[in-house]
Length: 191
Image (cartoon, rainbow, N blue to C red):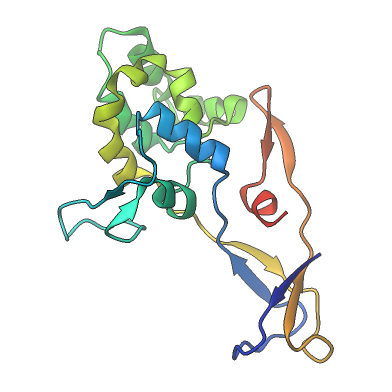
């Protein structure tokens, strides 16, 4: 059970209401991605130049904060994201041909996701030549990764008894996919 202090807030709730929790990505995942992208200083401040760009992170921001708190790097890449990075590959390379095969039908993409369930850092393991283009991939990653979404949990306490706290019951999510153990982003963030 997780207890959330709401003392001094104006939150009103009933048992069974939900509360959204926006998780943080694990420091190991963020470090791995920053290493692959050849970001030497994760705490360096960056700002994308166009004010018309919609990004989920503040401007300016650090790479650590963007990849930890705002961008979803644990879910498998979308087809459009893979299409974006495919553009950095040599069209004659085996990896380019493999990505093309993944997109040949909607079923092939879904089977690939089902079988491997790769996180964004793992894309560099699946497509090793991306490491050769890391400097060119940073901006596409910042602009095309989806934002972290809240995970909703049922409130398991009563404001009549616990008026200064909200209780949620969270089970640690662990599962196997692609011969690797996966962990739920939010349940492990809260643990």
